[in-house]
Image (cartoon, rainbow, N blue to C red):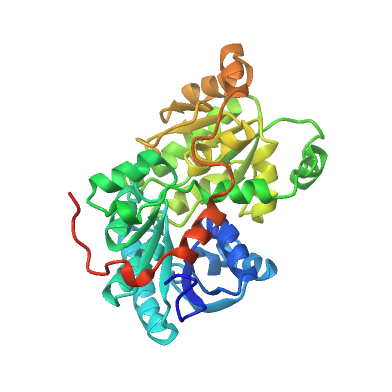
Amino acid sequence: MGTSGLKKILRVAIVSERRADYSRFKPILALMKRDPFFDYRLIVTGVSLLKQHGEDIRIIREDGFKIAAVIPMYRQNSPDTGAEMARAIARVKVGLANIFERMRPDIILAGFDIGANFAAAVVGAHMNIPVAHIQGGEVTGSIDESLRHATSKFAHIHFPTTADAARRLMRMGEDPRFIFPVGCTSIDTLLASPRMPRQEIARILNLGPSEPYALIVQHPVTTEARETARQFIETIQGVRLADIAGIIIYPNHDAGYRAIIQGIQRSRIRWYKGFRPEIFANLLRHAAVLVGNSSTGIHEAATFRVPVVNIGTRQQGRARPHNVIDVGYDRHEIAAAIHQALGDPAFRRKLARVRNIYGDGKAAPRIVRILKRLDLSKVPIQKRFVD
């Protein structure tokens, strides 16, 4: 419904499972919080509730966002398997069905390639609630590829990051009338974060004031879960061979995560469960290089012209800015790529000119403007494949 309709408040349900989706939802939530047109209802679940992953629900509360409901998704000491991932999605689906029955949202804002957001889209579609999907149409590796495209097929409105992703959604049969390329909201979070001096970040990390560091963020690849431990060892050894200080951030909760956490704790490299989004933004800003397989390397690092050594298959197929060097799971290849990123004159010239193809930091205002003018009564809930 538009602002001219009889209803003056739009009730929007948003589900956050982990810091990766919270950092993307945060700029949207901040705009909705200030705008009386919106009644946002934030539901927190997943690893954001787990102490072993940093209990990010505390950060959400400290940021001043009201939490409408909490759904336990993962059980304490649950198996580290794909089957448990599936059971966790089932738990959150049941919880969301009950909550949406009581909450009666006008629209569900789902996102990305994350299990709880996929669950929100499935439940919303079954309950005839319009679903808007952020960041659909991209190509990735692992189970993320399937989750992302499946979420898009349950969604009615799409906010992809790029024109290329928008075209892919059209090829998937989605209605072009409801596809709006807006950019990546994580870049909004980066650019809205107050700039911290390099010395302050060094103090937080217990590094020398000008000591370069590699930021290491590596998640399990669910289709390669048995290889996770070996893959992470190659990453750590590659950073050591490159002779640069490392700062490791904990992985997500996908199958194989325990092998990475065990590798982190044995590595003797500084590690952290996570940071507030504004501190992470500055940690990225001042990094000499980002190493691993996180989407941060593909979506965000180019904004600060940080070079990226992207390892393995997790981000395969995704469009890359020119700051990314792709390597396999081999320590010598990883070390050579780090040296190239830090010292190769041709690469450094290219890095100085890099432009982030995923956005300009204004995605959240675009999403909010579209939601305010969109007449939801004209968005077909019964979807049809559009040729």
